[in-house]
Amino acid sequence: MKPKIAALSLLAVSSCLAAQLAAANGVKITRDVVYGHKDGMALTFDVLRPESGANRAAVLVMVSGGWISRWSAPEPFAGRMKPLLDTGFTVFLVRHGSSPKYNLTEAVADVRRAVRYVRLHGADLGIDPNRIGVTGGSAGGHLALMLGTASDDGDPDAKDEVLRASDRVAAVVAYFPPVDLRETNRRIMAGVDVGMLERFRPAFTFDMSLAASVSPLLQVTPDDAPTLLVHGDKDLVIDVAASRQMHKAFQEKGVPTDLIVIEGAGHGFQGEDAARALRAMVAWFDNYLAQK
Image (cartoon, rainbow, N blue to C red; front, top):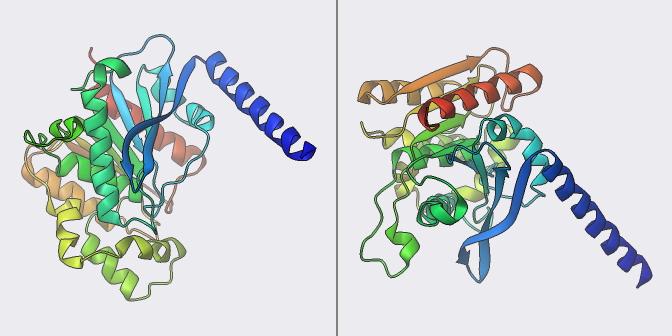
């Protein structure tokens, strides 16, 4: 028993030190806020708040890769999200019901609920419910785009007060997102030999007649949120053509949009490419969410 106790004590000390480090860097962290339940399990997000200079705008980060949403300590995200936090944004790390237990359509429903919850409890969370942005990469980018294109004003007749709230967002930044799930499924079924694409397969265990309804490319309307797309031109998992298509669709409907294509970048950004993408994200949200 003693080794276990020692390990638990070490974990507690490590968590305490991480929290102190985050506080020292001017970030207040609230872990595991419950925004809903599935099969008796909690759906949660973490909140990262700047301790000073908050602008009351929120950015929800879709924690998702292959529609797999893993828990990890939020403190490292405080470092990664530092440019957003330093600009005054409150950052929410949103987790959804994860593949393979839950499919892609269920992940969409979960993140929509997360936005509704944040809007409903905006005053308690210290944010303006009319200044909510979303971002994510790959599957997380797809979820962000779904929030930007296929949201609604809520169901006024719902018994659950969360479902009566709107899940509309005011700005979106999506990195290398799949945009037409019919095409993604076709590539998976064709056995395209790309590791991450193959990892998508468990999330596609749903009635494919629903694929259009969860394909942001097919949901674009003039009232969609201003959207920035960032994609590498050497992406072998989700071809840059996907973001080009999405960008064109937004332009045709008059939605404010921009596309940054990073030369030589693959599915995921490293080094200066990652820094460039992050700067572009902060500038986009600063333009569309921060009150001047």
